[in-house]
Amino acid sequence: SQCSPTSKLNQQKDYTTEGLEFTPESTKTTVLFCNCQNLSPPPTGNIIGSGIFISPKGVLEHAGSVGFSLIVWVLGGGICALGSLCYAELGVTIPKSGGDYSYVTEIFGGLVGFLLLWSAVWIMYPTTLAVIALTFSNYVLQPAFPNCLPPYIATRLLSTICILLLTWVNCSSVRWATRIQDFFTIGKLLALVLIIIVGMVQICKGHYDALEPQAAFEFIREPSVGQIALAFLQASFAFSGWNFLNYVTEEVVEPRRNLPRAIYISIPLVTLVYTLTNIAYFSSMTPEELLASNAVAVTFGEKLLGMFSWVMPISVALSTFGGINGYLFTSSRLCFSGAREGHLPYLLAMIHLKSCTPIPALLVCCTATIVILCIGETHNLINYVSFINYLSYGVTIAGLLYYRWKKPKLVRPIKVNLLIPISYLVFWAVLLGFSLYSEPVVCGMGLVIMLTGVPIYFIGVQWEDKPRWIYMRVTYLGQKLCYVVFPQNDPSETEPLTEKSDL
Image 1 (cartoon, rainbow, N blue to C red):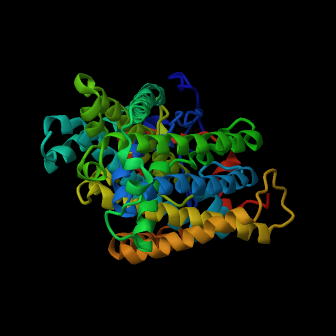
Image 2 (cartoon, rainbow, N blue to C red):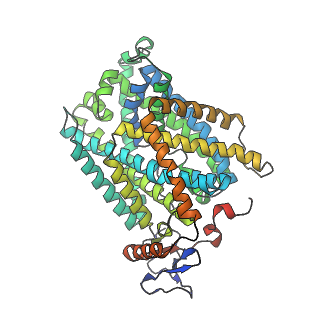
Image 3 (cartoon, one colour):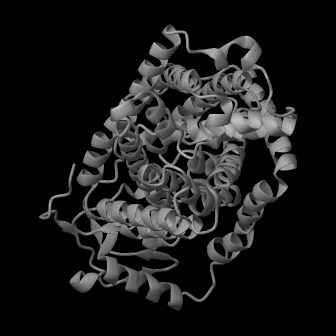
């Protein structure tokens, strides 16, 4: 619910409320607290998201054939199901919001948790946001450039405007962000339902030449293990979001029951929808046409919807717009969580005094996204972010096995069979190994950026005697500019995860 403008401030005797004055307390920055609990994310619906309008081209390109690309989509959903079950166990065993970051910090300690947070803040979320924003601009501009790619400057400029607009919305009001998410979810559902229905009608009319076994497994290029691994990375981008419920575990009603239920319902449903959507694409397009298209759903609409083809770019634009909104909220929440634990500047854990929105965290996410917008091409960015995503998933699930060994007597309301995490990790190791072999520069850059967090951790987190006057001035200036304070929380929530007693 929206924070009331009349919310009372919990004034502490050691702090000055006039002008949001900043006062340090020993090694921890402490400020005025706002009695407001308004950081719950909107119902993002990010599993069925804009990825299905982006990834089909990349999956087909690397899989090499229609039939094998459909197998990749089905197996991709199965792998997500295995990972989701592991996350369900972690979610109820370590019932903290923050997802991967909270689990890894609890299990492996501050350094590993910080590296995961560092890569998420500077790679995973900004890159994902950049890809979705570029897709939004491509689908909006493609009807104006039917015979060529939209100009580079135009796509980047429109993407930047979209990111800035939604950052402003999220800074202004949680309620506005929620309403936008609810409304624009209709866009993605409309587009997918329309594609599937029209595709099924085409198949019933006998238009399924590309789906016949002989044609479906006619390879465009010779397949290789490395290319197949990249096809899975492309598909995983569309499935990304399956672990988002773990970011708000503390706010899930009856997580012991509802986490597994969400997994059992959502993952098979998403896999079915994605597979049917790709089958529908191939009912009207040859593999060559799909690979040549810069906006697959627009090409599909132009071929089959006639005078109503305008519905498709609008629906996809609505979908991607809502996807950007959801990812902005989630990424800013991760920054907020990391700052609350002391792994990021405390300014990022502050919220606006009246609107109760994490403005500093949102501004950091917005800035990082705009930088990445200017330096990458869509499908390379997908390989880039998917590699880092899978790396973090594997480390988290390896943590599940380590936690089983470290604390065997810990009560686990959900306890999956050991074959599930082991199977996931075997697939994970093969996928990442061959992806790194096939795209050493793209994937290697992600590892390098992640490892740059090691010196940052020791300087920024472990070094307790460093000069603090610059940090204090920056924090004070940030508070004055953004009009932000700490939210009032349970004191136990502000203790470092690594210092808490055993669960």
